Each structure stands twice: as C-alpha cells, then as structure tokens.
Length: 303
Image (cartoon, rainbow, N blue to C red; front, top):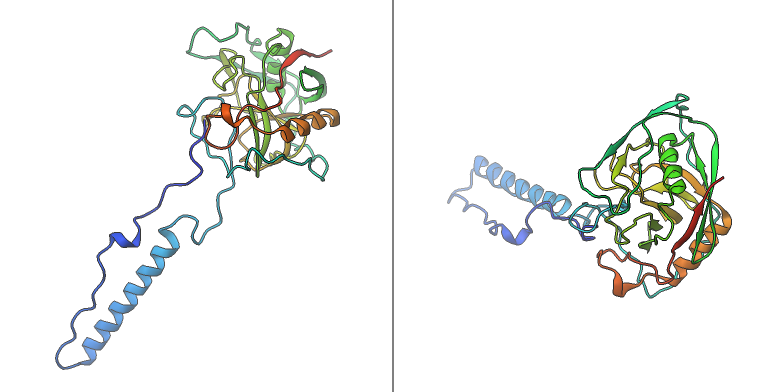
C-alpha cells in the first residue's frame, strides 16, 4: 500500500557529467579572450550551484512529511509515508489533549443528495446492501459504540461534516458489517499516528462492494480524536475502511472527516499504540502493520 520512504531523484549525480576543462587561452591575452574565459567560469559555477540545489531531493529542501491512508495493499495504491518510529519502542501517550474537530467554512445545503457506486469487482468480500441513493440530512450528530477486544471506543458521527459518509457508516453498522472484523493497520510513525479498521478481509484489500464520494474541503486537518475515511490514491474510492487518529497525523486534506472519538476510546488507542506494531506480520514497508494488541470489533451499535 505504501511506496518506499525515499523519493526519486530529480537529476543525475554530478559524477555522471564529464569533468569540465577550461578552454586554452590564446597565446596573447586579449580583452575578448578575458571576457570569454570569465564568462565560461561564471556559467560553470552557476551550473554547479543549480545541480547542488535541485539535483538532490532533500539536500537543500525540507522533507515531505505528508502521508496517506490507503485501502489496498502495496502495488495497488501508490502512497507515501513518513519515516517510521522503530516498532520496538513503545509510544508514550501524548501530553496534549484532543485536537479541535474541523469545521466547514460554509455549511452544506440541507439536505444533500447522496450516491453510491457499485464496484466492478465481484463478489464483495462480505455481502452487504449499499444505502439507497437520495437525500440525506446535513445537520445533527449520531453516537456509535465500538465494543472491541481492546476496550470500548465511542464515536460521534457529524452529519454537518460529511452527511453521505455518515449515512454509509450507519448503514454498514445496522447490517452488522463491522462485527467480527479487526483493525489491520497501526502506525506510530511521527506524522502518522492512527489505527485503520473496517476491512472484512483483514489485510487492507476489502470493502463493501461499492464506493462513496469524498466529502472533503481544504481546511481539513487530522489531529488527535478525529475519525476519517480511508481510500486509495484515487478520488471517491472509499467504502468501509476508516482510521482513528490518536496523535499528530500530517496528511493532505483528501480524506473525509466524519466524526470524533471519545476520551475513553482515545485511552484504548493509546494502550494499543504503546503495544506497538507486530513487525513480523508487517509487509507494508513503512513501519505500519497489525497491532500487537489485537483490536477486533465484537459488536458495533448505534441507537
């Protein structure tokens, strides 16, 4: 699901160029020759400086700290992840509190119209009916309780942020789609602290057999306590997988935020994060993988 941490080079190293040799001066130095030689030296110096500045990513640049949350294994979705924290080192619970939930700069129309697109792959890993296309409220909140093997996690879904995503999540909950599934990907890397869940297959490849539209806006952020949808590197490719953010997560505003996590749930996530990643079962190449402390949904309910 993730590309290697290193970025491709933007040009060949200096050793691939032939060593520059200054032109032989004329036997009798003339003003024109002096100008020619001086100009050549200046051009070569400028070329060398340009090569140093732009030929090596990271040499004179800030590293790209953005990450992504994919819903497919490596080779299917091209994503970039930051350098990982060693999985053998426990992650201490953050000292800071939860991040504020993002807000839309302009409220959505109420209602909005939702649409759900069947995927071409068949059959779905776990049979489920998509929600009906049509209007959906864009105001109000809905509580959801995740009863898990690691402890209870409470969610509050926010219709004002992502009404169609909330409709989809509630539909999956009411059909028992998440019951018995496990969270397959924990990341404790700096800039990507989250637990990814919602795959009935358990390896990042599964979904409900249809996709939902992204409900994003430029002001989205992903701080501690945020609930968001996972997807591939393609737009409108989410389905059932989601991620629970328990620490700083620096990713672009391309993942739908549709709710928040309660404090007891964050305490459960902190415990899971401290347990670390099961490196023996990780095949993603970015330090993330199944948590050593399993998180299996025994029952997901909503009023």
